[in-house]
Amino acid sequence: MKLHHFFQRAAGAALATALLAAAPLSQAHEYKLGQLEIGHPYARATVPGQPAAGAYLSIENKGATADRLVGVSSPAAKSGEIHTMAMEGNVMKMREVDGGLEVKPGQKIAMQPGNGYHIMLMGLSKPLQAGDKVPATLTFEKAGKVEVTFNVEDGKAAAAGKDGMKDMKEHMHH
Image 1 (tube, rainbow, N blue to C red):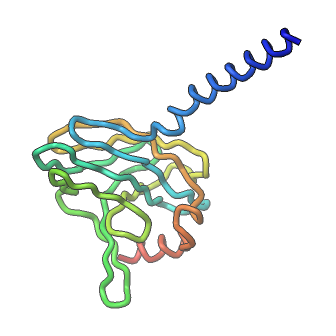
Image 2: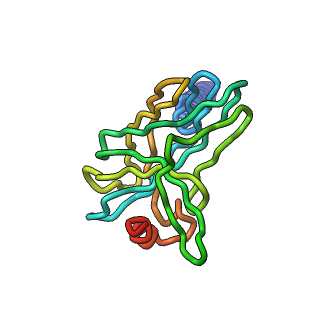
């Protein structure tokens, strides 16, 4: 009986160790660059033939001076652009942000589908599928560059019920 308890404890300890080892991988989807904290970078899955994908993250400036996201690049796309969305009458208009996206001291910008700012990965080399990991480099005016990974999530789940292809068609007509 004592041997049985030993194996139960050993198995329990091994499981706990495995869970603790895995936890940082699933939880640690945040990046730090100087006083900037980048949280949960993710992109929407795409369909074959879709030329671009929306990507999202949060940027929090914990410093005393403003910084500016001035560039995004990824080997999965020809270019990365920082866009803003706004309603003009009954039409959602998306435009590239001139000069980059300023993040003021103490400010947190949360890029989300259908809300304000987002990143467009233009000229995709292949469709993005849920579960893919897309490497990218974010370039800030003052803090410099940071390597991040956009986790590709199911477009329907990430869009909270919005049709990603409809959004893409609207985007291509801006």
